[in-house]
Image (cartoon, rainbow, N blue to C red; front, side, top):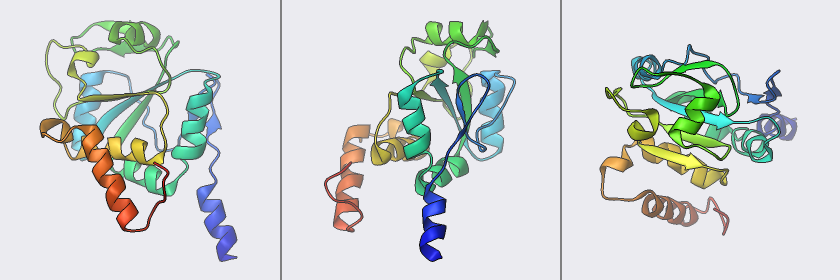
Length: 188
């Protein structure tokens, strides 16, 4: 029974919406006004992260099915980040930090995001006159393994981008700590 419960907690099949994107119950649906979203996240004690995905993206599916289904990853992100999903080729209206109104697809083009998934981490305060790409404190293009993925969220939450420890150094340090604790072998 305990084994079945543990197995059911690790299995997670994110539902796929009409737009072909995997949907997490803890993702936030907003009016896509980035400045308002940053303020809402801060009011909730969280940071804003935007995830760009597309229909049929095998790496997006892997992110949802293998990474976001892991309770350690999912619970950390849900507790510390407000995640808003964007469709790389979508037509929903977006208001950039500089006030320009775009569609999801023109926003992705304007901000230079060409890979899916791409996760964009925004600052705690909305800067005036900048675009999302200019304001982002970090960007994670592509799909990564559990620890790289989770460590990027932790590094942003801990404001590693304001310190001298580059993300790659932070990640290597955390991996070494996990190995010392016996929590992982050679995988990262």
